[in-house]
Image (tube, rainbow, N blue to C red):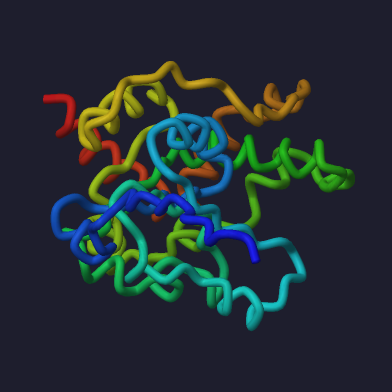
Length: 239
């Protein structure tokens, strides 16, 4: 019989338990609202944090999805969970309600953009992916009023309360500056933000005349209230 081999012990990389870690420094949740710069933001976040990606594909069984939920009691403070969190059963307040309640341990942030720019970007994203072949951009501005509010979700009575759950909301029109501010808030190095997932556009933009734009603003009053409130909160970080 061969002599017993004394294998070297594996060093302990972290003596701290997840719950203890979060008492000292929070973990982060990025609510990636579609067509609001999330692909670019995630590129930077991947250099700052250990990322956990929540991915839901169309047709996925919601029962299977729920089983893959991250256990927030086992997450350390160097983690950032990122996902769209949209659709009934998937909303952030349904998926991770404890992160909303434990504000000192989990900091939630998101990015928003002007509602009309959001709608334009969404149209061309869908069109370039093979959809919207029989729908014009102008027609698309006349459907799904206050669509952004349905993704958060919130209504005219509670939108401020819901948005106050986020410790920071960046503005896509000021993406680099927003990320620089966020870097300071999470104690990370500023990084040049790459431009990702930009949809090719065509001449339909010229069809959005003053009348079309004014009608869009009227039918999307809640989305503009949401955006303007986020602008107000964002500007408070610049003072």
